[in-house]
Image (tube, rainbow, N blue to C red):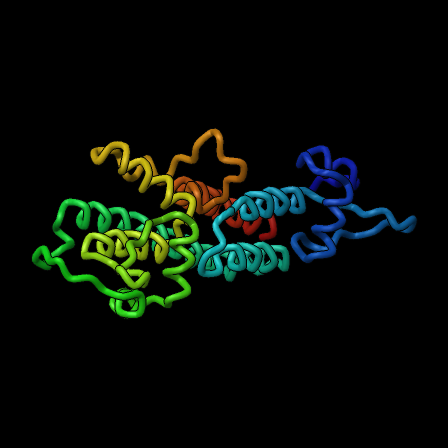
Length: 250
């Protein structure tokens, strides 16, 4: 097996030498042997583990412990337990698929509500107060207030100044709740709602997954569908790396 210095590994992977040392310190690679002069000696196995770690850490979505699972896979692989690492990767990939299903389901619910399928109630002139609305949606009043402050909807007020919610408001809030439960960001939801206001026939899936070029900060949940797709592709690569290192060690 080939041997490499710290600087060699850094150049091969495209990282700083201090990052190489940090990976060692954090247990993300196997502990390298050291020469009598104290210099680290890395092997091809270390290089492959670096590739695995870099791919796994590309995950941007943090919900339901995905990032934590990725780090665990890296550390277990670094410890040489490739069977366990493979099992963890399989579980990780299943979790990503579940998140993707939830994200797609939220979009389907949105389409249904907008088309009237999700509304089984007859039209009514009745209004609900804030507490009734929160109870109906199974959310907190603070959550309602947060959505309003972030511009997701504009609430009407009664003559005495109290906030009141119409059936149309409840339908819009159902959409917001479904998308938030699937971990879409507030900015992504707002972007989609604005797009719908401009064009009711807009492609919901595209609108919610495509940040504007004018957005100052773009998070993974602003492009959730794309981020989950990339996480799944990286997980497949990680699984392949585990098999490569398993053969190298055997």
